[in-house]
Length: 421
Image 1: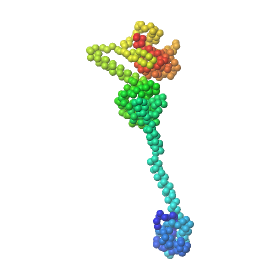
Image 2: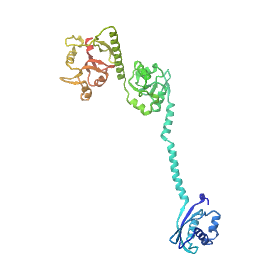
Image 3: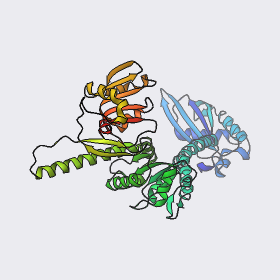
Image 4: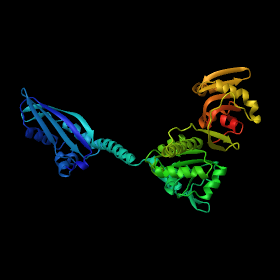
């Protein structure tokens, strides 16, 4: 019988009081059920028409008794199969031995197949779901939209995102590929330099928007950054990790770089510091070549020409208590005298009649403890970082030396160099 057409399987058990063989059991099944239910349900006729399959018997002889496991596959409906199963229980003899038959179970093959279908369908669905990443599809769709959002901006037709005009701040990158990568991350206020020379469009944008320069982490990115710092009003600087380009960064890496951006003043201060070291080395080499063995101590002087510009020159700075101050700085004489009495790297904080001496490190760490300070006297060099920390706390800083790029409008900064000018 074709198992594909089987609907039910009848499981029955036969017990005979004596020794019998397999052909005796099969003969008893066919012989004792013949004619009981007419031709329609006769086992021989049902087998001929394929409605009942091959009857299987597993026989065991134990202690003078025979036990047989009978299996009958059926493609009849439920009622006819039940009648056929009941018919098997009418068998009472096998050969010369008394026997009894008991139907143990009727298995619904279709139910088993349905269970198999459900379980297999679950497995197939899992395979399909593992191949279909909804988030990936969404990102691909978004990326295609963002790729279409790139525009050409300004007379130079620079690659840019659609939010360059509407956003208060912009991100300046090196090339078109960098713009595309930032657009993939949802960053739309981006524009590219597209070359080694800075376009006029970017220079004009830098005057009216907050500018973050985001360059590659290589030598080329460093050169472009220096050029942008020279001709544009840059506010912040972000760099790709060393040896990496912006166009190859992942979204997480891009966001990390932008969160780690630093004020442009700090970069400018470092550039200035490096330049001074180079100039000093060149100067020493030239003097050494001239045969001069001793070099006088030269310290930078900060001459404040406006609220924002700081001009750096070099003068010998060795103030003493006996020097005569220019008339316009007579009002700072007491600060001048107090500074001379301070130890190196010490700070005098003046609030009305109260004075407190701390180290520069203590001042930086405890700045939040001071609401306002009348004046700060520093026997040391004031850096841009220190100015950025202190300018909201005081309107007057008197110091020995200063190395800064920009000075806040509301801050008066006086150095020895200013007094001797």
